[in-house]
Image (cartoon, rainbow, N blue to C red; front, side, top):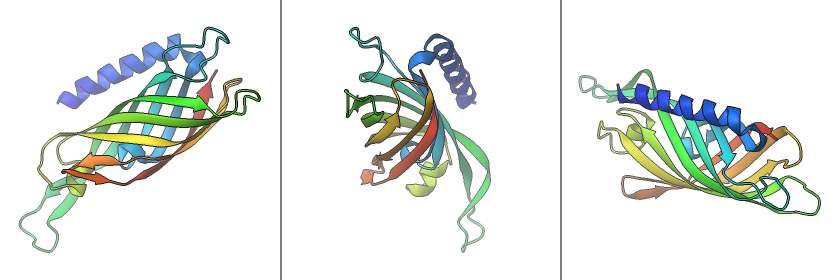
Length: 184
């Protein structure tokens, strides 16, 4: 199963960066959003500001994993053409940036923008929402929203984003909300 290899790589990358970069990373759960149903995410900043030594702004990487009901096609029962059996993992990777809204007071208010790719294995929620092609898919999405994350101390992180995604030659409008912990 190819998603087991992908999961092992994802766990390795996350554990490597957690040990190296805890000062400028975050762990959060997202409902809706780029993972369509929801994901557990880890993100971190690539570069610190050389003047302040902090990771307020800049480009970062986001890695996430989610679960989706596994859909199977049931052609015998006409009234219920789709049924669920088990769960399947979803994998998310994204590039994001956020900009502090108030540099003078270090309020933690930020504007966040990002681009993400969701790997949805065969018969996951992506097939149910789409045309049920029974194939694995890569689903691109964007996010733009508000993020509260202190750049001074570790603590609560929360965010709310508009996250449109592209599936079956259409843009689907979607939103997400997250809560988690910021490591400084």
